[in-house]
Image (cartoon, rainbow, N blue to C red; front, side):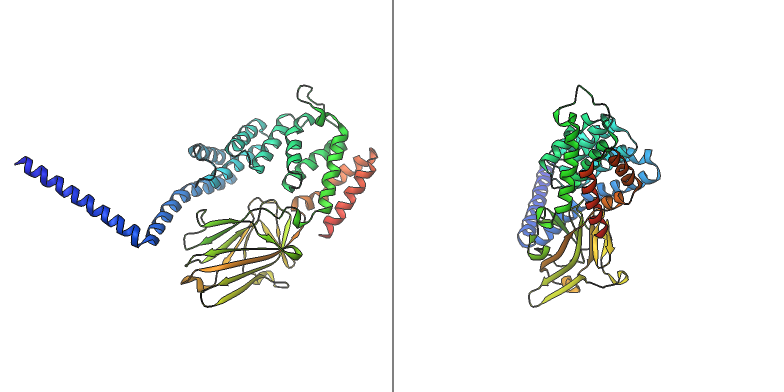
Length: 394
């Protein structure tokens, strides 16, 4: 009797497995969109969980630094097995960044160094991580010239990146004006021990800032996100390198899926750029729509863009010091029922970051200038004055 029941149970189990397999095959074969939507849902839930934890930790960091930094570090430990370019890559990078900036702000150079090193180990090619490590190394050496070696080496590899230029310029200028702090004889090297090398470096950076143009570093990633009623998620995004045309115009194109409600565009971080015009062209099956998002003389109250780390200045958008600039806007209702091929065109000008502008308006600038006059550093003073004039006119 029991053998008969066992056989019946086995047959029923096999039947259920067969039906499940058949249903899976039918779904994969005839409803790929449903499969993709399910996959997107699972990935979104997975990444959103950690993004929510990170945002909550950052909010807590503002209220209670000690509790907040503990939460961010705990999150970084939770995702320690995440690797470069996987789904949690952005969360892990942002976690490292928040931690390093916190410890730099409170003067904990040992912990700043520890987490900056973890960041570079996660992605040795990340320039922002390398800069964080170089600044942490400099701080760990008591801001002596002997601690400048990683920062100078980084600058030699990427001399046209303002994110790297400006920190080195400020350090070099302070050392030249105030005088070198005693170097560490164990770590000092030729590039650190020559006081003239820092003045030459400062002059080289001033020259680069005076003569830069958009063409010198336009070949960088922007990122476009689209929201299909799930918010802006990493899996609904595309990195683009816009084509540079005449008159500092940047152009690119991408496909947007049906149901796209909003678009978010992330310019490269830490760029001293100003967006003068932004035009979108949507090509549907039977018609085309054009949308000018930033038009001269449009009052700020009428602008349709939502901004982060960007500011409206006259008739343009200026990228601020923040490391996460982006703007987003609502798409035409036509996308509700149909996807579209989209062309993006922007006119971009090189401007100066808020950090540079603030420096030339600060008391520190006038203090350093007075010390340079005492040292009779005429050429450096002259070049500084030229840069100050250009910044004030921007």
